[in-house]
Each structure stands twice: as C-alpha cells, then as structure tokens.
Amino acid sequence: MTREDKAKAIEVLKEKFNEASFFYVTDSSSLNVAQVNDLRQKCFENDIQMHVVKNTLIIKALEETAEEKGYTPLFDILKGPTSLMFSEVANAPAKLIKEFRKTHDKPILKAAYIDSDVFIGDENVAVLADLKSKEDLIGEVILLLQSPAKNVISALKSGGSTIAGLIKALEERAN
Image (cartoon, rainbow, N blue to C red):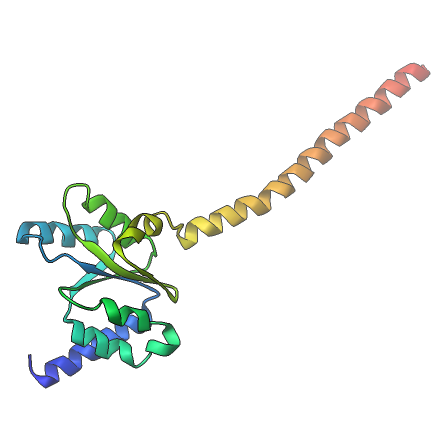
C-alpha cells in the first residue's frame, strides 16, 4: 500500500468515524473464507458495514478526534487482526455476533463505541445485544404517555354513565 493509498484510507476511515454513532471493533481472524463470506452476507442483510482494516490506519483516523469523542480507550485494544462493523442501530452488530457465534467461535468483540461510551471486552456482547434501539425507546415513551390519557378518558366515560344513571334513578324515585 503506497503512502497515497494509506492517506486515502485514513480519510475514508475518518469520515466513517465522524458519521458513525455506533461501531464495533472485532476479531474474526480464525474464520475460513466460507465463514467470513457468510458473516459478510449477514452483515449486508442487517445493514451493517464490515471492514477489515490495519490497526495503524484505524489509530491514525481516530487520533485527531480521540479526546473530544472519547476514542482514547480504543487504542489499547487495537492489536492483532481487526475488523470494524458500522451500523445505524446500536445493538445490531451485537445481535449479529451473538447469533453468529451459536455456530462459530468468532467474531470476538474487542470493543464497541456507542454514543460516546466505550465497551471493552467480549463479555459485553450480551449487554449490547439487549440494548433497546432508539425506535423501541420512542415507542415505549409514547405508550407511557398514552396510558394516563387513556385512563382519564375511560374514567370520564364511566363517570358520565354513572352520573346519567344516578339522574335517571332520581327521576324515577321522584315519580
């Protein structure tokens, strides 16, 4: 790889890191070609971009914004074979890794960057897979907001029929 190619690769990575709120750093080195192709296919199906990149290029791409974005803890884990997974949904790569590892030993999670939080270590796969997506959280908030309104409306409806029933009963007694 020439210096020019490296510079281009670093710029592409910088752009990816600046755009991404979520990315995972994994090791899928012991997978054979068929398994890697299967993993890449599953990534494609789940809108996850997978890139195998040299650690030195990743470090150079992260260095510029390491302090402000909180990338610094990632530098220690950038050793050995590394692949990056970029996603629009925070838990999608973790769910994919968890599912894929039912039949394979890898990929192993080295680290995950989720909205300025860094999760280091493979033991975080289950926690990350259980994270709720932004859409799930919004849906839950809407349900919670609707619940009191529904209770008030049903109380008013039942109260109205109770009052009407009382008035009718009082009329019948008066007659």
